[in-house]
Image (cartoon, rainbow, N blue to C red; front, side):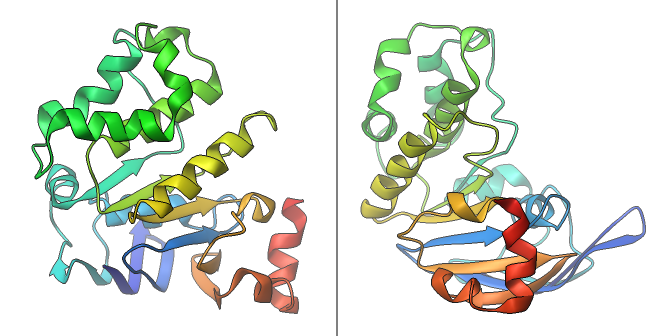
Length: 235
């Protein structure tokens, strides 16, 4: 589904990503873990077309997407929920979630895509008419992910879906990820805290200073001394 090979990205003439490679196959949940500033967000924003790589390839569904505008990548079936969990304060929760159905027609009806979003986050039902400006941090995160789901994506990119959330909210987000994966959609998560990586993760990548230093099963990461030194401080 998603294949990234030897990706290099420079920002203001400084290398941020160096030879990064990873893949996400259909139905998988894959996690990219690294400390703040390691290159997680740059990786996701480059996949979505907000940054153009200096080198390397990005393929989605066997199509080269380097150089495509973000809206075209979204219409191909890639949903993105950024770390900032930005919602439109002047719109209601229902309007925020429905927005992708206004701008990105898909093979499935808008109503069905919206219903899928509420099925994953049933707690948002009671907030349908609440304005985006009146939401808590956890509620904004849920709306941001639900909005990406309403696109009807084949692949969902979630940048720090649990970052800064109350410990009470984190299990709800993890359960939502379980349900999304169970529905057959692929999910690619970026996390700075290894302890927030879902136990049902299929594959883990660890990024440090713009380079992938580990790729494999999550339980194997802690047994690698070099990797453990990177991820252990996030406890």
